[in-house]
Length: 177
Image (cartoon, rainbow, N blue to C red):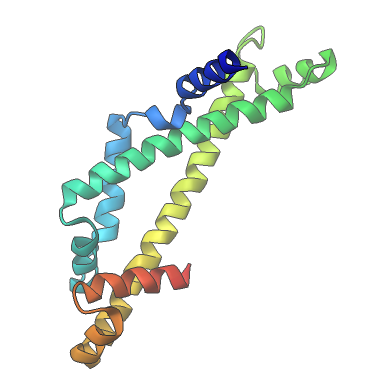
């Protein structure tokens, strides 16, 4: 019994999810930089909210590039699972799958084409959610700036003194999404 528990513990420690070790690529960093530029925006309010959240542009890029790498890994893992399910186990289902996705003379690349297609679609969906969240956060920053300009003492009292603007933006963005 004790040896079984030790073996299970060792297997659990070794079985690290793929997404935990996903390293950002140059493309991940480029996409992260674009997202950070979009989130930083051009207005004083959005720039202040950006600085309250990240401190520097580099920290934003670092954080978002790790997120991009995780998203890419998750999209690929989910796509492989979906393609395996779609391919099926019968000869007819495998032949249909090969005809649909296979692009070379013997349709032997069907699984890879399927995974690529589904991973791109999933990643695009995740990127759209990121863009929506950025838009929500920018709108919250502008709303909080307007609220603060109406009365800064009341604003600080309502949102908690130190870093009241950042707290306001975070709470407002959470409420909108």
